[in-house]
Length: 540
Image 1: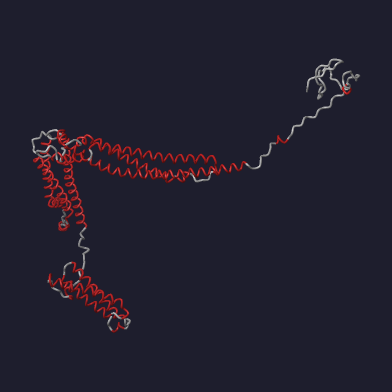
Image 2: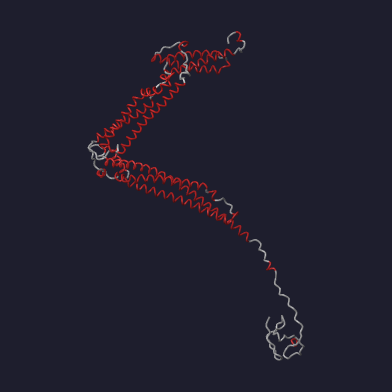
C-alpha cells in the first residue's frame, strides 16, 4: 500500500487512518492478552504485553486525525486501564513473583488452539473392532454391577426380616433401645393415642360440616332456579329477567371444585386412618409409661452380646461401602485399545475373539476379583447374623413393630397439624361462597317481587278499561207471537138474559161439545144466575 504505484489509488487521508487503526487493534489485542496472562499467573508475560499495548495505543492515538476524536478518546480510556494494570503487575513482580520479562517481538506468540481433525481417524476395520470392544465392555460392566446390586437387595431384605437395626440398639443394662425410648417419650408428651382419636373425630366432624355447607349452597341455588323456571313458564315472554343458569355458572363451578377437593381430602384421610389402624396396637404400647412398656417386651434368648451384634453390623456397613466403590470403578475404568488394534490392522478381524477377552481381563480382572471377595464376605456375615438372630426373633419383631408405630405416630401428628390448617382455610372459603350465594338469592328474590308487582299492576290496569260488548242474545227481545182472529160465530143470536150486562148478551159462547172457549179469550169463574149451565172454562 505504500508503494508509489499504489499510493495514488488511495485517498490521501485513508492511509493514516489504516495505520492508526492497525496500531489500535494491535494494542487492544495485547491488552486483553495481558489480562489473560494475569489470570494464569504469568506475570512476566503480562508486563511485556501490557507495555506493548500501551506503546501501540499511544501510536494509534497520535495518528488519529481531528475527524477521529471518538477513536482518540477510546484509545485514551484503554491506555489508562492498561497503565493501571501494568503498574500493579510490576509491583507484584518486584515484591512477590520476580518473573523474567520476555521480549515482546520474540517470546510472545499468541496461543493457537489447534486440533488435528485426522488425529482420531482410523481404518474401518479398527473402528469396527473398537465398537465391538465397547459392546463387550458394556455387557461385562452391566453384569458385574447387576450382581452387586442384587446382592445388596438380598442383604437389605435379610436385615429387614431380622428386624434390624432397631433391635440391635440394645446394650447391656438397658431395658429398651435408645431409639425406642425416644419414640415412646414423644408419643407420651404429644398426648398418646387419645390425641389421635380426638383429632380423627374432629377431622370427621369437619368433613360433615363441609358437606353440609355445600348441600345448603346447592339447595339455595336449586330453589332459586326452580322458582325462576316456574314464573318463566307462568308468564312466558313477559318474564324478561336473566335466567338463573346464566348467573349461577360461577357458583356451580366453585361447588364442583370444592366437592372435588373435599373428596380428595376424604380419600387421603381414609388412607391415613388405615395406617393408624395398622399401628394402633403399637401406639397404645408406646403410650404406656416406660416401666410398663419394658415389661410388655419379651426377654431375649440369645447368648450373643449386643456388642458382638454391633460388630457384625459394622461388617455389613463395610461391605456396602466397598460395593459402592466397586460400582464407581467399574463405570469410570477406561482402556485405550486403538493402538492394540492398529498394530494388527491387517489381521484385526481374525484376532478379535482372542484380543477381546485378554484386554477385558487385564482391565477388569482385579475389579472382578474384588467383587467376588465382597460377595463372599456378605455371605459369611449373613450366616453369622442368622445364627444368633433366631433367639431374638420375637423380641426384635415387637421392637420393630413399636419403632414403626412410633414413626407412624409422628407422621400422623404432622398430617393432623397440616390438616387443621387446610380444613380451616377450606371452611373460610366455603363460608365466603355461602355468603355470596345468600346475597345472590336475596337480590334475585327482591327482583322477583318487583317484577311480580309490576306485572300485577299492569294486569289490574288492563281490567278497568271499556266494558265488554253484550252478547247478541241480550239484544234480541222476545215478542209474543201474533194471536189468530177468533172464528165467526155459528150459533143463532139469543135474546139478552137477565142478570148480565147488555154488552155480554151479544158475546159468542163457547162450544159446549169441545169444553173450551175461544182461543185467547178469558171466560172467568163467574156462574150465570139463569140460563143453561156452562162448564167452567180453563184459563189459558
